[in-house]
Amino acid sequence: MPLLPSKHRPPFYLFNGHLQTIVPSLFRQVEGVQYERERLLTPDDDFIDVDWSRVGSDALLVLSHGLEGDTGRPYITGMVKAFNAEGVDAMAWNYRSCSGEPNKLLRSYHLGASDDLDFVLQHALASGKYKEVYLVGFSAGGNITLKYLGEAPEQVPPQVKRATMFSTPIDLKTSAMKISRVYTQRFLKTLGEKLEQKRQMYPDELDLTDYSIFWSFPEFDDRYTAPIHGFKNADEYYARASSKQFLKHIRIPTLLVNAKNDPFLSQGCYPVQEAEDNPYFYLEMPDEGGHVGFAEDFRKNRYYSEERALQFILHDKV
Image 1: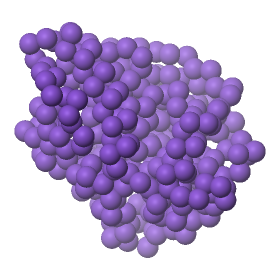
Image 2 (image 1 turned 90 degrees about the horizontal axis):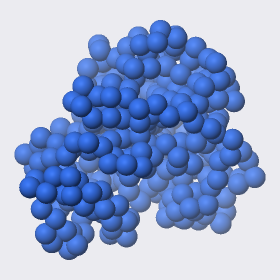
Image 3 (image 1 turned 45 degrees about the vertical axis):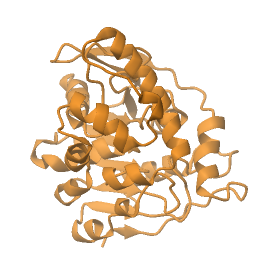
Image 4 (image 1 turned 180 degrees about the vertical axis):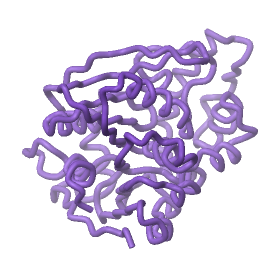
């Protein structure tokens, strides 16, 4: 029964899930990571920018960031630095429109875009250099990665050995309704700015009338995410893109760490039954941690998320 106890203990002054979410996001700094960027041209005449941090290894960590994030976020660079220090190369990929410039197509990214993860992973493996690959995903990136691992497990490359996810909304519909308006408005602001760029590129295909009155993800996803990416409506998007339905099919050791006080996650994002039923799928539910937080002593070089991923992936410690 892969339900795991947790040893995570946040600093005493981060005494609730909101502080544990916000403070690391605003104040953490990770030094020493220097990326080499590579632009990948996709089969649909678009591009995806990936950032490499190589140490000359035959093992590779592939990282997927959160909603409206990028490869420069401290939770990504902290993980890159931790695995580099253990002799593992790292490749973090920016979703379409998340690398600092708009992508070419009307579509951008969504929380079920496992085809893009497969594309960047296949590119990394094409060199023939990597004997082992590990996957780490945060939040939206966790959902994309879990979906990838479970929707067609027989197609996952044999080099992919283990995976770890943090703060992952595996049930998109209920999480979209759970997240508070304060967080939602922050995301809708940056998403709206990107839509305005796309409106200038595709003036006949985007209508931003009344965008300013949107206050929820279901409204946004019903109006934009779903139709732009080939879904009938938000409900169909959530149903098809949510990774929860695929967890039972995962066939490599995979750990999901979702804090119980995560302000982004609904009760549907704690898949106890799925972990009990699948010997490859491990679930850890620390009482504390917030959303993509997991800070401990700020004098330490690593957060709990980094220590936990290293333990599970490299040292086979569940």
